[in-house]
Length: 80
Image (tube, rainbow, N blue to C red):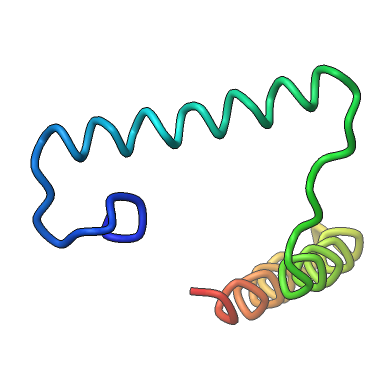
């Protein structure tokens, strides 16, 4: 919450204003999307993560469920 409000102990009014600011940003992004704009690019580390996880998902085999789950878990542990 600190990164949204910008304070360790915000007042309730500062908290509400921060929520309004986040909501305006999300509404703006949604309006751009509905207007046909391309979504903003994700950071490279998240794009790479999505590629790795997609590869793991594509190799899913019911016979090897534990191996599959281990591979998913190993990809998730990089960003936890």
